[in-house]
Length: 461
View 1 (cartoon, rainbow, N blue to C red):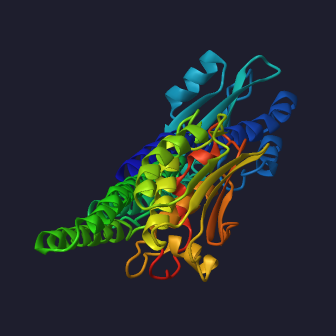
View 2: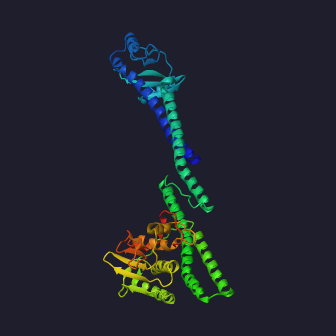
View 3: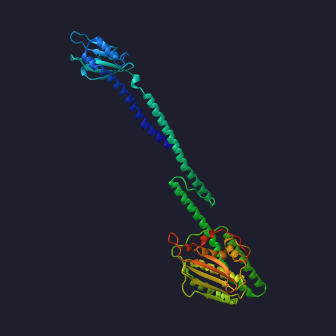
């Protein structure tokens, strides 16, 4: 503000002072020009006659003559004496100098200036026309012009201050909001954002800040999701361990082992629920993310088949003889399969058969996990629990992983009745969809967590 005021004042002074001097000089030139015009009007009369009466009449008829501002000084010629008509204000030395030089001169006198205009007579002598120019004529209109210039200068300064104040507010307010939002983010308020307004630089800073804040929220959500995902993967070996404890028989040691396993399962469930308090958001996988679904299914079924054999379960796997490329990462598909197969072992009796089928289509890959258990009374509600925080005995993350896996590719997950008589979970993985930057949309698995959370029913993860 001070800099703007100083610069504006300097500019106004730099223009106003020279302009004021020019105005004063123009007023002086205008007054002198008027005096020269009045003096020149008597030239023809002087060249025609030298009679005093006629000259006096001509002088009286001239402008400003009656006011006593004009005078004639005619030198002596022959038998005619020198004539001085009108009041003389110029010094005699000035008169003599003007006659000698033969050109007009301007001399300062009391109350103004005197113009001496030489005029040649028919006799060859030089007569002088004296015109008095009052000081008021020399400065006529100058004061008013200076006042106008001063007013314009003050108006410019005031206007520049007002404009600078508006511009300053336009810059200061967004900057203060940015500082306030930075403090709020530093205090842990992850919802702090800045409106993108103000000058271009501040708008870019606001965009960068909001992007940074989104990244912070995303990274924190990633950590929570990672903790929940890793904890859920612990449930697979825990399920095996719990089932193995059933073969320990009776006795204090066996009961203690089973109690310890149950306690460990409860702790894992608590970790999962705590980690999922916030909606996770993860970044997309890089270009080329994907895996061979057939290979992953063969590997995971090798693990679960051993446990199925111990429980007398019949296992069938189909569609994994040839490679089946899908646009999701290997670990996410394995986690989804482990979640579904873990559900089969947890919620169906021993000896219940199950199967995994893969169907490779032109635009989608279908993965079907079926069992011969009692089925799910309300499949839609069970799948909806994947977006909530779970209920007693269920974290809801199992089906949530499956749902997110499918939706991230543009596909979906559905629960229905299988040909075995129990539950069938169908995962449709869409193929060939790419984002604008060339990366597959299917790689954005965990971004699907942005969906709304809905209540869950106990007993189905």
